[in-house]
Image (cartoon, rainbow, N blue to C red; front, side, top):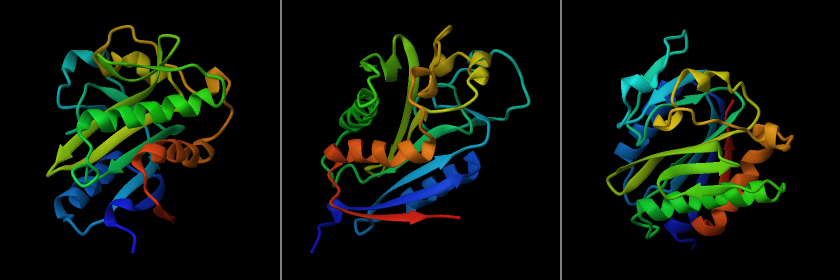
Length: 216
C-alpha cells in the first residue's frame, strides 16, 4: 500500500478567478486532516494585482481598472494574468519533513532546471525569493503555512502581457524588470510547460502515486 506521503492529486483548473481559488485553497487547508492526500493545483487567473501580507500601498504606482486583492500569502504586490503558469502547492510539509525554506528551494530549483532544459540560464536569490534571468524576474513565489500545511505557491511568466508589471514595484522592488519564457526563446504554452515543471519539482517532492484531474 502506498504511503499517504507519496500520494498526490494534481488538479488542472484552467482559467479561474483569483479570489474564489484562494478561498478554495484556504478551505481545503482548514478542513484537511492527517488522512488527506496532498494536492497541487495548476491554474491561470484573469488580470489581478495581489498584495501579500507584507504589502505596502505605495508599491501600487497607479490606479487602473485591474482589481487589487489583499491576500494572506507572504511577500509584496505582484500581478497575475492569462499566459502565466500558476502552481499552488497544498502540501502537508510536516508529513513530508520539509520546512518553508526547503519547500521554497524545491520550487526555485524546479523552475531553474526547467529553464535550463531550454538553454535559459536562471538563478535564485537568497534575499529575494523567485527566479531571475539576466537580472530580470521570470517567476515569483509566495507561500502560506497553516497547521503544518502549505498553500499558495509560484507564478511563472510564460506568454503574457507584461505591461501591468510597470504599474507596480514588483514584489516591492522599484525598477525590477520582468521577463517571460517567450521572451527568452521558449515558445511553449502554459499547458505544455505545466507537466514539465511538475516533473522537475517532483524529483524532490517524491510523490510516487499521482492522480491527474482535469476540470472543465
